[in-house]
Length: 211
Image (cartoon, rainbow, N blue to C red; front, side):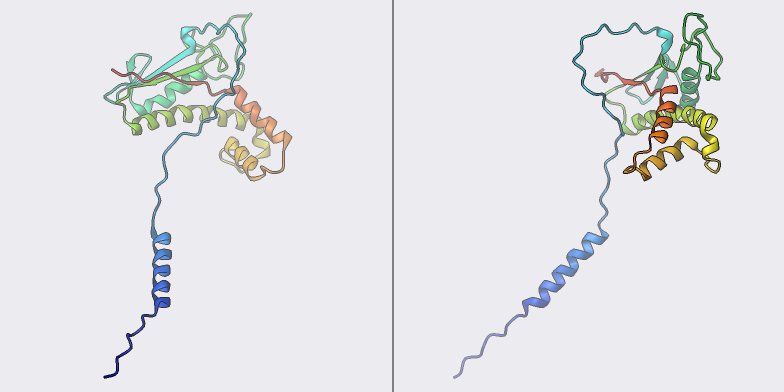
């Protein structure tokens, strides 16, 4: 009796199906992005120097405790009030000493209990190890938003004529720099640095509390 030949399986079509399934999963799969904060670390400086003395009124303390409560200058504060409180501190311009450096562009109240000058104003942020990441991010965003508000104000005051149609002049300047990153624009870079120097971002983060 003649033996029957075993039927052959066409492996080519199976490879095509597997390839199509692979493409399908690659196209439809959503990869979640990690949350983070964009920060530029200062360069390492081995030079030995005496740390400057910081007046207490030039220090704005922000604390998030283990219960996600926000304490600003040792007083409870709601998150929605943090941005304005930070603006008031940075923009105070309280240096009335003739030998000092009065801030001629500040629009604050000039209180002698708040910061002397934006260049001297430092924000000290501290959180607990049990603080939620969402609360930490929210507080960070409000602090950065305060700096952005003041920078936008000064950019509009100094350079609005170059960006008449822009709602946010400083943002437009940064977008222009990013768009033309391969063609170095010295004038644009100088203007951006001028705005940053008017309200330098001095945001210090202390070691988290364990208790």
